[in-house]
Image 1 (cartoon, rainbow, N blue to C red):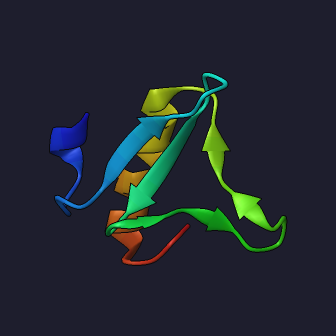
Image 2 (image 1 turned 90 degrees about the vertical axis):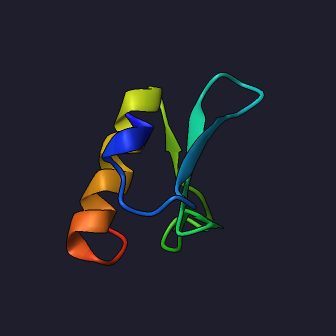
Length: 60
């Protein structure tokens, strides 16, 4: 799925608890309203989110 992203700095890492967090344009995706890093249950969900951000040109 990484091939679908436009920016080579985009990546997904697995957390210690088995969930995933995403980096968009080299920066970790952060939920400002909740005050924490955005986490995903599945790796594919994180990659889909990054593809959406690339399409929008901003965080979704």
